[in-house]
Length: 74
Image 1 (cartoon, rainbow, N blue to C red):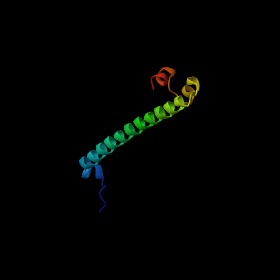
Image 2 (tube, one colour):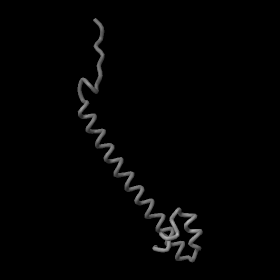
Image 3 (tube, rainbow, N blue to C red):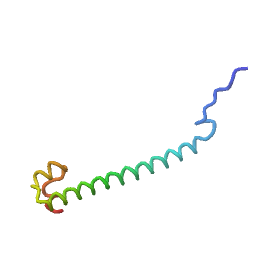
């Protein structure tokens, strides 16, 4: 007698798999958002520190990727 082909995604557990995948994607999205916000905050802190050291705004903009207008608002 031939062995039956077994597919865990259709035979059982598919709904649990989908739920775990959704949970993973939600957690990953939160992590990515937090990382991007932290990175932006860090760049702004560096720009502020450089501005306080009287570094030219053009150099700060080139180094941080921020616009000159954004640096002036800091």
